[in-house]
Length: 226
Image 1 (cartoon, rainbow, N blue to C red):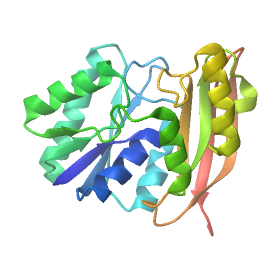
Image 2 (spheres, rainbow, N blue to C red):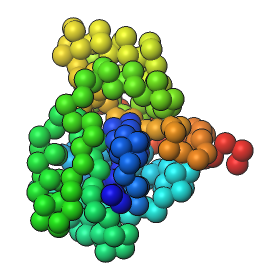
Image 3 (cartoon, rainbow, N blue to C red):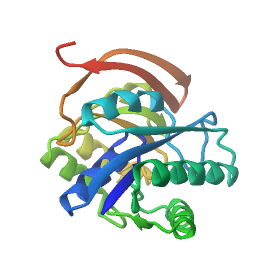
Image 4 (cartoon, rainbow, N blue to C red):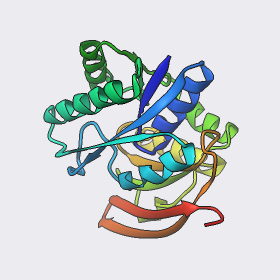
């Protein structure tokens, strides 16, 4: 079916779009919520404004909807964004990158049911370390743009998801209970390259802010060759 993708620019939403396409769905548009609340319950925030560049290299239309990011109220904004995608691009389903968050999955599901479209969760309950290895297998280039958990710190910003990264987060999982896929908000990601991109992006600038074990990186990207 023709689907819209709830898209943050991070690994989960991008990989979910990739899997949905492999399952035979047609990607009709991307839907991004830009939250003014850095502590949003629903939406990724570091470098969210750069989804425009990702949409360009995916050659897909992008719906951007701003939200104050207040708990529960932000769901009304999400509903409005999905309505717009249905009206403008005639989508029949919505793809999410939900891994284990019942909060996200259930609320998105209710909105989709209300609007008469299907919620598609291709990553639901996947093995989280296996997901990271799959990103490498399918040639995703993913960088860390935010961290928010002990003992993660500023040094993790900009790291690529690689064999060494996976080994490091597994050690942190064993010692501190860190979720290896960052599902608990431990870290946030941005995709620079993947099979859905017609052209690769490169990092050309960054601004870092934070303290202690909570850091974010606002990045500047552009296409290779430009």
